[in-house]
Amino acid sequence: MLLVFLLLLNLTNKNDLIPEVLKFRKPAINYLTGLPGSNGPLLAVKIDDTKEAHPQIGIDNADVVYVEQVESGLTRLLALYSSNYPDEIGPVRSARISDIDLLAQYGRLAFAYSGSQTKMRPVLAAANLNNLSAERNPQSIFSRDETRTAPVNMILHPNLLIQHATNKLKMDLITLKQSPWKFGDLANAAINLVSAKVKFPNARYEVNWDSFNKCWNLAQNGNTEVTSIGKNVCIDNVIIQIVEIQPSIYGDKFGGITPLSKTVGSGAAFLLRDEKYLNIGWQRNDPAKFTNWLDKDGQEVKIKAGKTWIFLTSIAPTLQP
Image 1 (cartoon, rainbow, N blue to C red):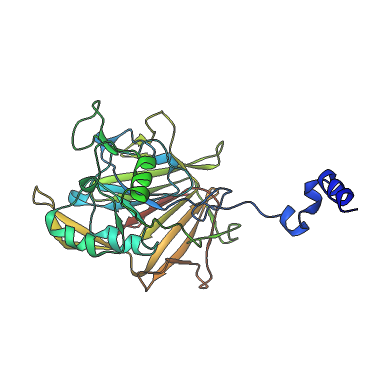
Image 2: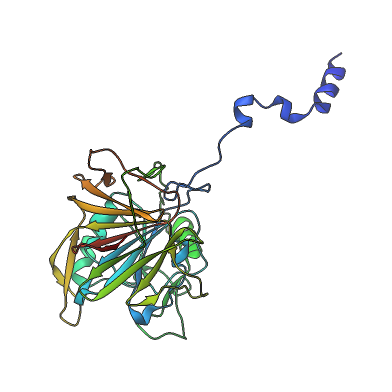
């Protein structure tokens, strides 16, 4: 009798033995994008954004990108990856003091950069970051592109970096356990928008609505942003965060003072999505907590599932309805 039962069990469709609740399990969602996908180790990479650094490599794979002011009113990018690591990212540049507070909200993530000035190294070492700079890793991970000139020729191989950090350095690379965003429909109060200009002292950005691809095309200083493979940088959500920018105690080797963008506190902001914009506010009193994005009634703002760029500027944008 037992033999007959085992035979019948083997012939039974295995799917019939799976509980109904497991059959309809929702697919995994990436916490940074709100799109179906995995949540791999969270990696932040510092990327040059000057004219000489273009075209950039792997920037279109970033889930979230912050645009920060640096010396001489220029800008650099701080790109976060967790859903998809391209083979290469770059050009990689050095860390800045604004990165520490900005990244604190994500926990002890992996931070990749080319280096830092001597005075700032102990500050970075004391920060809640997994330090994965080029100063601590082999040239097989941070290589040089011979077709580019220094200092905009350092290229990161992120998959090799994560493997090295996990297996060789025995680092506990974190993955996000919750999302910094609320995803959902756009508020009815949103206003039609065709384009917006974002200003820094020595850099100008423009985002223009792409009605075909349903996203914002990015341009810098009058030139359309494209990747190294000629792909337009098109963004689902643009957040223009108005922050206080003040001089820090740090500077570059040319005597330029490093600015500090204050991302702990509160202020005004603008959310651009779906060919519209919304006046919002931001609030972050605890450096270890995610920034809250709020509407005029104090309710959490919902963004569109997809890629998000955040411009940290002290200058209000120019909006073109």
